[in-house]
Length: 172
Image 1 (cartoon, rainbow, N blue to C red):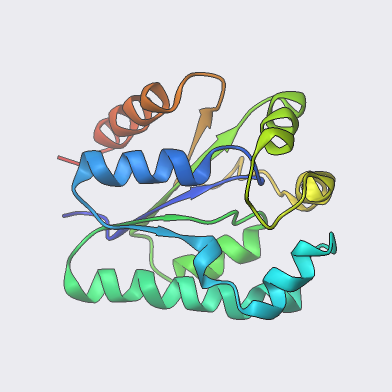
Image 2 (cartoon, rainbow, N blue to C red; image 1 turned 180 degrees about the vertical axis):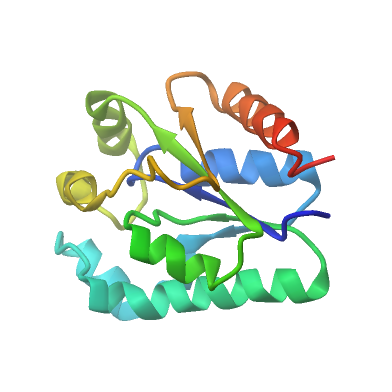
């Protein structure tokens, strides 16, 4: 295995969990939803429509970085869904290693906003999507990031992701 982790990133509602779970299934790797790493205080804050601050996110990102480090130490891959909106957040997940990859799910804001508004049973209200787009630092110059359009159906996105990772030599 050449990479221990693939982080499926992007704003809320872009399909990180759906694409990440499908990708993990195709690769035979475990899937971790970054939402499950949030401390209760973060969930409570988002549930009331309050955007998280950097200070709120550091412990959450640290927990995800520990999970990635465990995959690296075990020599087993993991797919993680995590917004990773800022370069500093992605750097924390990299933790000084160049052996993880990011799949940035991107698309037209109106499409992502419509999907977010239609989502049922999630603690993050659609009202926070604007703060997600405002916080996003597009990874345009980061060599370990692959941009993927969210317009196609999730299985097609996963197929494109696997093809791109194979072209780069990241997957056999």
